[in-house]
Length: 368
Image (cartoon, rainbow, N blue to C red; front, side, top):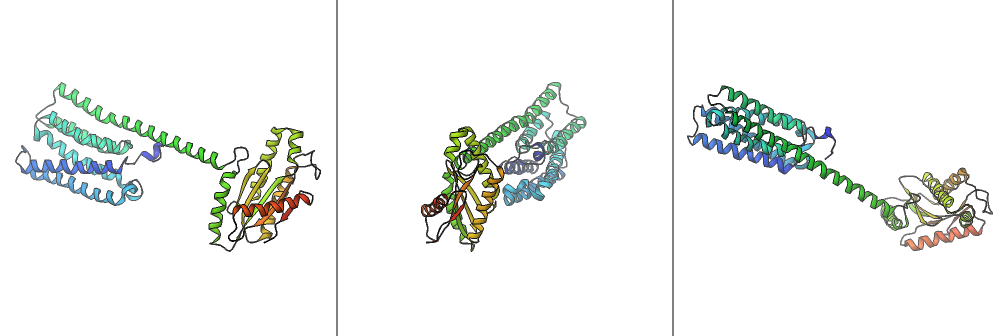
């Protein structure tokens, strides 16, 4: 559940807690019904009183069946929208009952004990929503105050103070529960952030932000599995920054890292998000896995990378092919049954061919 205030306005903390609350309504209502027909009532028209108790039990059973059907979806859809009305119905029924309990027992203290038995489960169940808790509590308290004013048996000062203390203790439990819930949510949120961070550290290169070598094999396996659903092929592009050792020697490793970041951005910007992925394989070497219709499409991706790097115009005084940073690229097509090592070997051969031919170019592996 979201910890934002707005999403807690009409929310039940726990499905099990709500079922518990409904069970207590049934059990306590049944006990009072037995008391009615057991002859323990005084000064009342017991039939009217019994009907209200039966209404509580029937309404509880209906909501219990709905809750068992909806389960975790209880805080969604139509039932969630109806929750304020459902809680208010419970409150009105219990208000009628408590109004009569003052005359029935002729003991305000006993009535307050019974009130705690009802309010405490409601507080535990609806503590996430101040609105729901107020809808349940306010009518009951009002009916008790009104009933006490009309009842011949009055609260003494000590009883009145005790009643206020009892109500304060029960209702303040909401803030203890809410604080505990918020602390749990914060803890879960921090755990989620930590997991995401660990996943990122495990699968992404910390310098460039591209996938790292560790995730390369997993992505390759996933891509092969998905190929069975299409008529496309998987291509591997291996890229190497030309004369990168000389770049580091001239400009230093800090500038070398900046160059790696710029190149990685050029690669990432040149890919199609849905079907391509770039990896920093090691040092100044990058690899790209691309699902394409054929070799011409893979070459197009390589050319886009080449052009993007050219457009950045990063100076490279140590290069013999250009005064700017360039890359050599080798492309190989995966064949059914080919392992990742064989695919890498084929792409590497094409890369070395590009270097032998003068660098800053794209070479295609020959199909075995």
